[in-house]
Image (cartoon, rainbow, N blue to C red; front, side, top):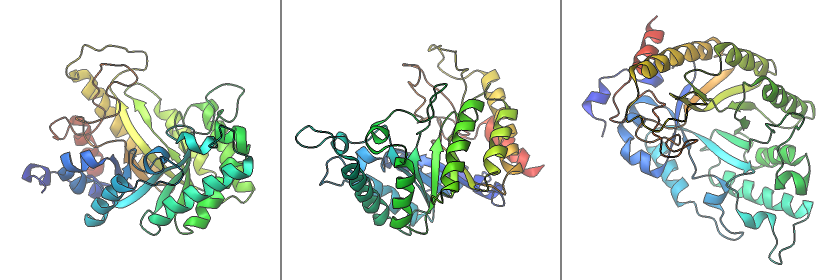
Length: 338
């Protein structure tokens, strides 16, 4: 049931109806606690963890779809689009896939078969219900002089594990949009590597439809110029762009304070200005940018609590801990009205 106070506020999805989908990462917990906000403001959802490998495929012969199914049912009941996240990643992947029962390492072909089977089963279950998938997540290295991130996928299969994942995904659901997703995506060095990877996949005829820019940013960085330059560079590949995990931390990267019980007025003003500037850039590129997803809904629940600083609360969203609109939300309404 949407509270009357929530209903009184202009819907985010309506504000940007001519621009892009407005999405939120959700969990079975938050779809209960934040249902009113989600159904009022958003027209797209992503499962925060519930569709990751370790969550749905803990052992070779066991799939655990209960939590993912709960999110899918909620989306269907409320006519929400769904982005799938994520199929192939170095993290949150079950150990069994990289190790045979006798302790030996699987061969390249064995691991490819396991990857294919996983993708077929997960995508097949939600075929026609999930319109876009983050097929491969965070495969690019953050280290200078290193292109792909070290991982067991890379060690055992080789560099073409990325291309293979996209090929398997296209076979599993020919109509789903297929994305490569990564963070630090506007950092010039990493941006150029992501561009190089995706261009190489396109040149090989690999079925990739878009790039996911996570958007884990803060009130000070990255600069608007860097965000704009990255979007422009990726858009030049003529692929779709999605902002997949947006949140604006109120802390600078080097700020390790843990004593704040609530955000300062300055933090809220800076955050509001940032959201307005960033969404202006998004609107400028709406021809290529077709979805913007926040990595959460309101400040009562965010993965940034305790990360990267233990014992620290963060306030990265448009709605506060009581689900009331913040200054950031008001700035977006002004942007819409201007």
